[in-house]
Image 1 (spheres, rainbow, N blue to C red):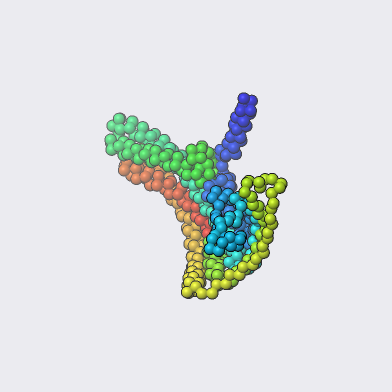
Image 2 (cartoon, rainbow, N blue to C red):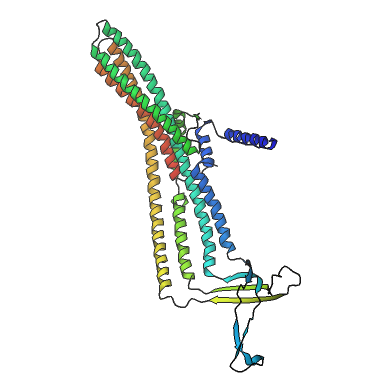
Length: 448
């Protein structure tokens, strides 16, 4: 009972310790760092590297000495009978005598040592294992870059939803105040009913947007949790805000960076593919080479009509054998030639794709730089537009309550203001996301 209680307490403490490791509040950089260690795709990519290391050793070990053993026991329930001429034993010519040449039971134990001496496919296999490890390592880098980008986008979407909700709630508060004052003026006969109705329409629309944004915020948090590798329903708090992130990500010096496409991860992955195709060609060529293997074995055999193999009196007879085998491919009816030609074609295709990848990366870098520069310019433009929209809405609100402006003009100004607010938030998010896109294309190193 005490043991069960101890195990229970240990399990609870372990769960509490594990739970404490999960974050409750995160800055963007902390979110990126956490995701690189806990995102499920990143974890699988790390496992792929470990599997590639085991694969490399597995291939290497296949060319090292291989020792195997075997033990065989046989019990002849009905022994084989042979007949020989009886005259060998003094019998009459033409007669035959039945004899049994083997004992009823036998046991053998053998050990065999095999060693490759020359095998072209083994040499190619060693080279392929190294390339496979490089492919797995590059895939991990690619995955980490994509995870980093996904975290930035998911984090930004949450902030966008939070900022939108705050703005919409402020707009609703102002609209409700305007509606109350307008309704009082209407009750006193100094305003038309249409003015009240216009404000009600605007208020209803903004409230609907608020409800929808609240739902989107929930989904945005859940998507962020999945990207981080957390439980989808775990509550977390974000410590950064959208405006601060926008300011931090306005770094025009990155536009002057001159990156060699051959150093980017996409190019390295395409290069890995070309290397693997070259090795497949070498493998097909190696099949025309002879293979040389050596082996040596030794063992003991025992024979008896009764099961006496566990007794010291049992006689055991030793034997051993050494051999070398040479396999020489001579004629395959053109099969090897066709396989080699097919591998050569695949290699040429991979080299063409490598060149295409290099050109595509150059275009992606130029496009990402253009998008980032536009995002910064658009953000500055939307910021100015919002300031103008706020002044226009304030003027129209003053004119409306002074009786020299219409409710339609006020509603138009308010709608313009609300659109400018959302456009600015989206422009801020675009700055952050386009910077992340550019860094991904440029293969910005990941800090683990």
